[in-house]
Length: 280
Image (cartoon, rainbow, N blue to C red; front, side, top):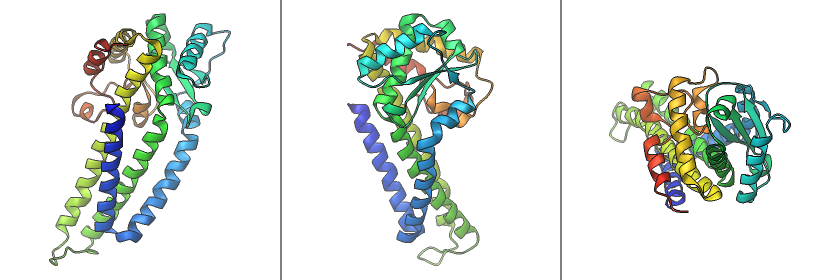
């Protein structure tokens, strides 16, 4: 429940930031134009991102005759979740990972890499599949699209503000040179990204919890996450795009240093700790 409330609060904060920045920079007209552009962009992303992502990662439909165990697990978890069985795809890489995509339960896809099928036992794999189906059940694709839309509006408004400040098109109330406006334009997109990352991390915790309630075995998912973290350090994915890392159950690109501060995933040790302390 807390993760749901946290998501609502963060989305509210992101929306509030958008409205404040829009009014300060472009007024009602500027805000409306930016919102219209962002909605159109993300509308296309919402309806077609699954096809784009599957093509990006060279995913192919998993034939039931070749992957009977995987199909059985997906079917069992889907039944527990009370949603239609998603389509099942295989990503041709030894990187151990999985992701879900699709705008709703009727159009959902669960994709597993060849690598994850090699290193997890049946209970661990079921835990991972349950996590991904939890994302579908919790409508996380919709939540992330809303967050991306609002963040895109803020970025667009910030671009307008930077342009205006640099070329002297806008001045502050005291007749200054727009340095305060420029500062605002630089700072607000960073705040928006931080809030967006917080939403993503909150949804990961929620998917861990929801998925474990489907299987009644949170420790199996905890064990799977430990294996996946170690495997990703040794064998990060060699293709795709880092912008899609939030889709995967663990970051497949092995972020290090300062980059890890902007990770879309919560710290792995914290996820494992929460799962091991769950009572179902």
